[in-house]
Length: 352
Image 1 (cartoon, rainbow, N blue to C red):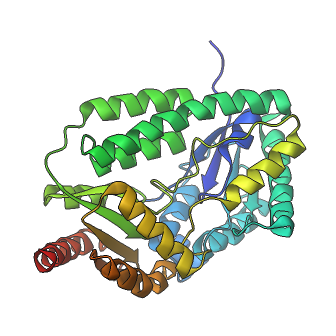
Image 2 (cartoon, rainbow, N blue to C red):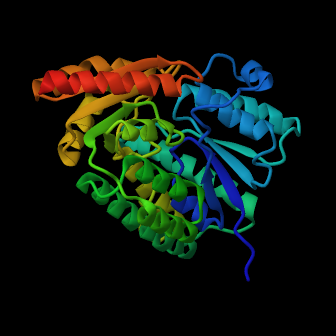
């Protein structure tokens, strides 16, 4: 029996899993949670930031992730960048037992930006190989692509089943979480079990936008009230970068191809234009056949708030409602879900 691969933690959603797998690591995304106490230490070190990011930091500070071989922090939000600065200082002082690397990969594409992103991926590969002791080359990249592609096919089936109504939104979110935290082979087994155990009822199909969801708390509350999530544009769900790979004859070619692939990803609230986010939302509402859109935005996660007026206007022009709750406090998931349920019910009554 072979030893399990070293685990490299990921905070954020911008790390290409193919690179980490090719370097002999299992990528493990750290999500945080909707609820839970934020320690005084984490609050003081991080300052005013999204509570979910503070809970991720708390997990690191508590030693929960001490079995990691390394940690990659993506600069895909202001909160995650704050977390990186804290962890870099702690790593330099020997307060955490593994190295920390920043991954800064702006969106938008273009030759200069793609070159910058490709160089970031080269640095990521070097970091991962230093953590695992395994060199990355064309052969290991091809093997990683085969493993990751199987995961992409499984998640494609998850998306299709959810849109058809034969899989609930909360189960789909659990499938994405398994894919983000487990080795591909283990994730495939977990996804199979999750789908077998799920028997959704007849739910009102809606699309979720706003903040990323670290767990299924809100989805499950909506489902208990007859509201089902058939798709989302946040990076813990349909916008997660999982199952996408490139074929390349060399590592340098792979980094460049992955940079081009990164530029084509769904727009994020923190790093994309409102017009891009709105157009993507309209496309996804059509794809999923959602009756309406729900938006849930946590306090201090301000990016999605700026998108909502334009999104609401564009949806209304097409006869689709948007129900939203913003500035959700640190432990306000349950109350926010209740408010959102009432808002969805009212929107549905007005639309009908």
